Image (cartoon, rainbow, N blue to C red; front, side, top):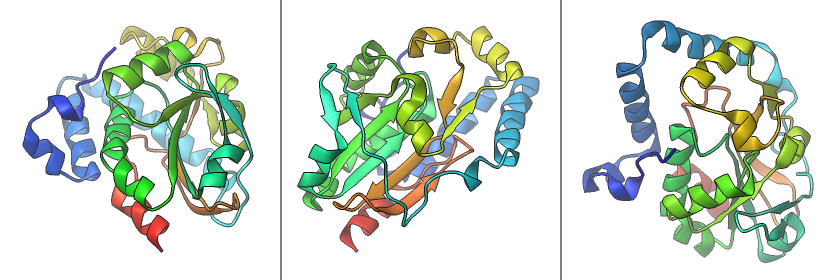
Length: 228
């Protein structure tokens, strides 16, 4: 599945904040989605928030786990190597099938030159297979690595992993979101979308976990952290 990207949209869209773009995505999605299905998505969000997941996620001041993961070309990328260059921005996302993930990553892609000018690296991590990551990287012309976290092993260390509830699995299956195929396992587990900034010492300086996947931090907020 290929979601329409920023480069394919009107020029005016590129001047919008990420929050405005995500709002547009939500309004469009809900316009063509039956109200009972919209209610099920909201129920899943509410149940995830009530689960207490946010009590167990890593936060500012914690040390980020080290990792070694394959990128979209199946090349191993290590956090140790990235941190030798400077700070590291990590975006955990669900997969190429999610329009909100696509919107965030394309927005981050637009800000990549400023992120690099601040001396930082940017990677995005999801449980999808390398083939899915390759398609996403190519289709949306991303200029940073998409890392493949099979089994959500790294996301689990950040405290982000949850299981998609049965009622939402059925909705996904009806809308052709095939997580077992995309991720290569039958766990139906995903990471809550999250954005982290670590210093070159590996200590987390900024952490935001969005149990409501329709919300993400502004790239300018990330830049402010890197420049502070």
